[in-house]
Image: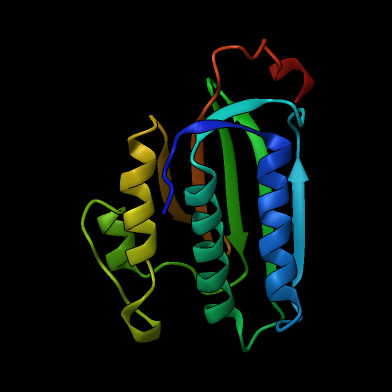
Length: 161
């Protein structure tokens, strides 16, 4: 898999999320919302393939915990300091305490065939190489926060957010 670091725009990231959403929406009748408060031309350093895999993993995890619920999955894009933050949340049961205590520091899995969180751990290690990070928390369901370092050529766009 190509893990080449490149410049992605917010528009690129929204397109990745939208493609993953379309793939899953055919099978699952969930409400998907994308809330963006950043100019679509804002740039970050990331690997297109890794970002695509990250959002695929996030949606798979959310779908597996929401399958018996009227599911809602939200994506919020905003700037924080020198990072683009993408917070993905769902209205599922949230992360168990063992996962919250671990915070992706060590490989850990639970749930569906022991698959939950392991993909996030692997993605976290890759994203840390780009000076980014992933945090998980609960807020009326599970939330995964992805922070990607803004490209140096961005102007101070926080006033537009």
